[in-house]
Length: 402
Image (cartoon, rainbow, N blue to C red; front, side, top):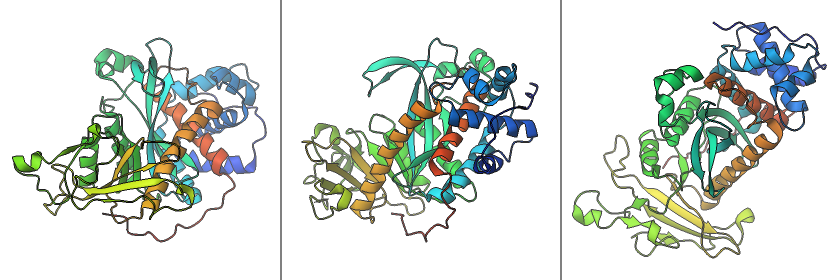
């Protein structure tokens, strides 16, 4: 078993507020020196400008010549569990943020070489090029204006499931090579089982993913409220169609051939181009359509579920860019658009994590080291965003199920 790092001896005097935060978030770490090093690392992330290398963080919070080595050991070798820390962080965030959505996004972390755990070559549509990178799948709590990460998964391509690379990167046996959407749903499922975290609809962008249909079916079986961006090729059925027989199969619509939602071809569909506008979305043309998914049955009912497709065209844009689907068919369109905006805020938070909190600066190669670093950067981001906000009780829940 790896030895534990020596606790820091000299560092800038921490504020009482930061000390209270770290005492709460790191309360599940079993050893006192782990909690002290967690505090020191967090202090470095909050105070060191620019690139957050271990050497720079250590120099900022400790005068000891061995501080850098101890920081490396704390991140890469010390066997502390990150999930209990993330659960405490989620509880701390929940009572201050009062989240309206749980949002899922990915973070592309460029890397040199091929030794860092999970590194692979991937085409990134928003960059328009193939990069050597790690991909983190993040779960955020969002109130619409602020989004804060509470959990992460490191995407593992198939070759990282082989025995030799798993052993070198210290990848645990339970970490599997699965689609990114499966990691996302596993994080959401675990968060639902964490006491003290307010449930909220899951919001994710799957418009570039061929597995969107699989994700929607699983969300339906789990009875999760959701808003998901889907690819134009997603098959849907008219609202009153049966899922049996060739006649029904011929009625499946392929959105990929359309520039906007084809409402006239879906019976019982309707178009909204102004009646449900409000405030922040004034001037947007909103189109909605009630549909079913082939083979998507609601658990316990034996019947096909009902979903709402919707999209909105911003001023100056000829065609809508994204089509969304939700099982919350009774929610007002303006509420659904607010959930969509929460996903945009999450992408902004990822850029902030990269710019100000060293999300891309992890220098180690191990799977535990990556998770330790992502946990601490998430905690630093949460503290900067939310420290000083009072704890508050959540308002009564409104029915949100379809």
